[in-house]
Structure formats: structure tokens, C-alpha cells
Length: 349
Image 1: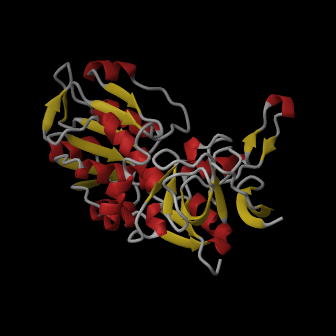
Image 2: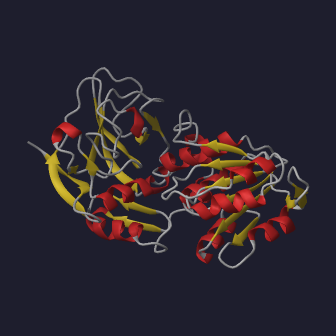
Image 3: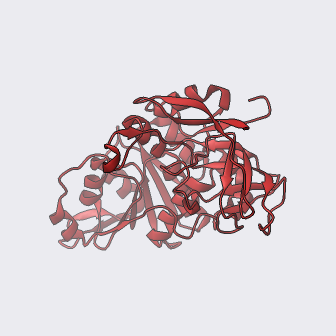
């Protein structure tokens, strides 16, 4: 039996690098040698919990999760019934297409492994091929950039709109990139970490706001002009607010800043509940739009990721070899220590 190394949750806040059986592809499957895999906030959630709850009939205890849902790699085996894939093809993966469960999110397989089985492999559905001009680490951004793209699609932002993105993590910065590539007139990014605001400007944001130091509403009024809510109270002229931060203060800031007919798109998970000013929403007729995952965007983004790879590459703050996976997850779990961590799997790993 051939084995491979794979990362899964250990105890609370810890990972285990374990030896597991290397998958053997069937006639409809493909085997991908993983070359890069990003670490996401969802991975951090599993680590904070120490796994995921088992089903009630199994006792409800936490069970390990095979981690990694942002993989990129190269095809090393192809089943006889698979069309459109060849050995050596470089691919990104749709983790939600696996029949044995979402890759890296409770499914049988995780992308933070030396090899990944693509079950019922189909180009355009479970995988997409990308050219060798794109580094694997940049290609691994495909999945989170699909999340960011869906958020922008849900916003229905038009070129003449004025937009602010709260949260300059990978999703927020990805949303800023997509907004500018969409031709949106003015995009602001707000965060509390100065280095992230510098990154926002580097990827194309028109302006930034340090929300720990600046009055957000006053600064937005400077940037987007003055408007009003339904009662005529002065408000910034911002058309669309995007919450990629997931903290209650952002929601409340938006409600207090929204003009009549503004829109709030929520892509970040609210980790803690809070009391919201529903009356404030009413006074602005604020539209709340939720954005979850990437129903159609997972491979729609791939050609543009290829075309604009230099811009997207700026999102990666740390590239860590697989042999130092524990350090990679420590970086990702330490607030403010990293922006986007990608684990690389090269020959020497």
C-alpha cells in the first residue's frame, strides 16, 4: 500500500500531519499531485473547534477534518473514462463537487495533502486547466477569488457606483480587485491594520480608511460626496457597502452611514451576534444581500486570474513549505501575523 502525508485537525488549535493511504483513481477519476494549497478562515474555524462534530449516533464527539479546500496541482493519473484531462495538466479544483463530501470541509479528502483524488473528474465541473505560465501558489487563489467574485456579482455594482469594502483580508481585497476589473468608478477599502491598507492600494483600491483612527462616515463623505437617508439626514454618497470583515461594528457602521437606497452585501460570516438597528435600516431602505460561496463562479474566475496574475499574486503574504505546515497554520491563526498563507509542496517537501 502506497502512503502519502496529509494535514488534518489535531487537538484544539493544532494540526496533525499523518500518513494515509494514497488514493487510487478509478476509471472516472483523476489523481492530482498537489503543488500549493491556501489556508482559509474556514480551516481556522475547524482548528478552533478541534475538528467537527460527529453525527449524533456516533456520540457527538469531535472528529478530525482533512484540511485544505484551496488546492492547485498537476494531474499524475487519469482514469480510462475521463475526457479532456491528460497527465501533466495543471489544474485547480472545485471542492464542492466531490461526491464524498466537500474537499477540506468535512469530506473524505483534503487538499492539504500530497495527492488528491478527483472523483468523477470532469473539466469545467470538478477541475479547470490553467497554463504553466501561472505559478501554482497564485493558481491556489482560484477558490477564494471565486468567493470574492460571487460577492461582487451579488452586489450588481455598476461602473458609476461608489463602493466601500470593509476588511482587507483575501476576500475583501479580492472583491476590490474584481470591482475595479468590472470598471467600478471608486472603490474604498477599510481596515484597522495599516499594512493591509497598503496592500489594498497596491491591488488597485482608489482610497483606504483606517477605521481604527478615522471617522468612517466623515471620510466616506469626503470621498463619495454628501447624500441623505429617507428622513433627509446627511449620509455619505456611498452606493454599496461590502462586509468582508464579519464583525458587528461593521454592520452598525453601515446602518449609521447608509443613504436612501444603499445596499449592504454580507460575504463574511458574523462570528458573534449583536443587536442591529432595524429602524436605521428602515430609514435608509437599506437592502441587505447575503453572499455564500460560488454557485457559478468557481471556474468563471480562472481565465481572469490567469490574465491578471501579477495583481492577484500580491494577495499572498507568506509561502510556507509543506514540511513546515505547523508554522503555516500558526501564522494563519495569529491575528495580524499574515494576510494570505499558501503552503507549497515541491519535490524536496
